[in-house]
Image (cartoon, rainbow, N blue to C red; front, top):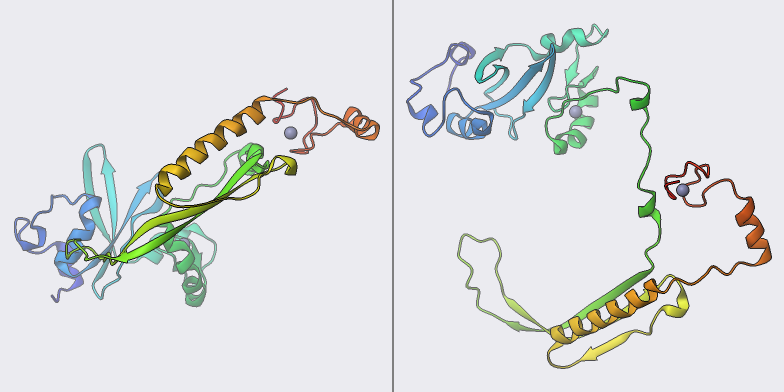
Length: 268
Ligand SMILES: [Zn+2]
Ligand SMILES: [Zn+2]
């Protein structure tokens, strides 16, 4: 297909013709990929919000025929407009007056092509993004809040299975990329219960024999019962005189380092 920019700009063919077969008109963003395939063209679509341009849909495969479109929408009404020069459209966003190379995914401008080339592999996996910057002093700072997730869990169970493998004929349909060639029959397992307090850790349990899976789950349920009993039985802290003194004198939480009194860990 060989079309001039003018033809793309002014539109071509019949909207009921092949270019649009199976597609709605005006084209929803969800159908852009199908439109690209049918017409051997790559399309990027940008949106406009409060005079700010942001990427809406960026093509996976840039083709020789590429167009950048600006999508105007008001309520249910949508209208595409051809962007002839993206750099010029974005040009007044910075004070830089030389040529600028824009990342299509985040619209960040670079002064050199090689800087943009270094950036794109890291940016493209995130897809099109609309950047917004903090508007108030409080929004300027973010901090880690899930202090509880830094705490060690009291019990961990490490388990490993052994299997016998036997060859099988694949019955998967041809369209599947997965080819089954072996069946794994569990033959045994080993697991180890590790507690943050060593005296409650247990020696590894090893099993070889029939009904391996059933036996494994029976054992796990027993272990869970035992762990719950240990956790329910809260023992008083036993502190040495020195530890007691440090505890009484402390003004900061030992977990989050916050001032005691308005501590997110204690909720007081
Ligand atoms: Zn980017
Ligand atoms: Zn705390």
